[in-house]
Structure formats: structure tokens, C-alpha cells
Length: 148
Image 1 (tube, rainbow, N blue to C red):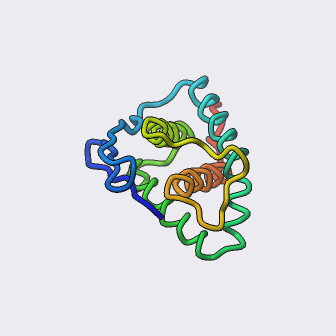
Image 2: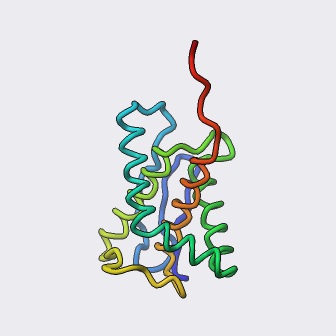
């Protein structure tokens, strides 16, 4: 699978190989998002899940090699978003996915016109699939307790 992104402590994300070399983007901050931002992020993740995640995660469940790659990408996304220091949020995941797609589009990438070929997905599709997997894990976490 081609290329990848790395992040530094300041949250800058840069590609290291492939056609997206030397792209920088900002990873979303951890400020508390507004309700409309959360709704927008959830909607963006739902669209990503419908377009790539559902079929991709089904394929990964049937293909151990793909599942391992998705797990590795998910760990890298979690790390770049500081998931070991603070909980992942829909806003952070949606912002990350948007940044990755925008950077890729700037370098000529086009989303699949039809369903993606999950037999040998490229780095970008695997990374976006990892975002879908992480978003799915957010749905299984207990929600906040109601305020009295």
C-alpha cells in the first residue's frame, strides 16, 4: 500500500511518500465543539461510512490481512489525534478524514466512482476505512450522563 502520513507534536500532518508528498494540514484542536459541529461531524462520518465504511468493514471482517491493515491505520489515526491523551470525538475524526481527503484531492485523487475494490485498497482508502472503524467504536461507548 503506498505512502503515509506522519504527525509532529504540534499536530502538523505531512505525507511521507507517494503522490501526496509534502502536504501539510492541521489536525483539529481539542476545544469543545458546539452541538451543530457535533451534528455536522456525525453527518460527515455517516456519509463516509455509507460510501466506504460499510462495504470496507464487511470486507475487512472476511479478510484478516485487510483487517490487520485497518487496525494499524486506526492506531496511527488515534495516535495522531492524541487518542492516548484524550477521548476521540466525532468532530476530531471527521476533521481528520476531511483533511486527508482534501490533501489527496489537491494531488489529483478522486473518490471511487463505484464501490471500492477492497481486494487491494490503496493507502488512502485504508486510512479512511480506519476512520470509519474508529467512528463505529464511538457509537458503542456509553453516552454522557444527563445533568440533573
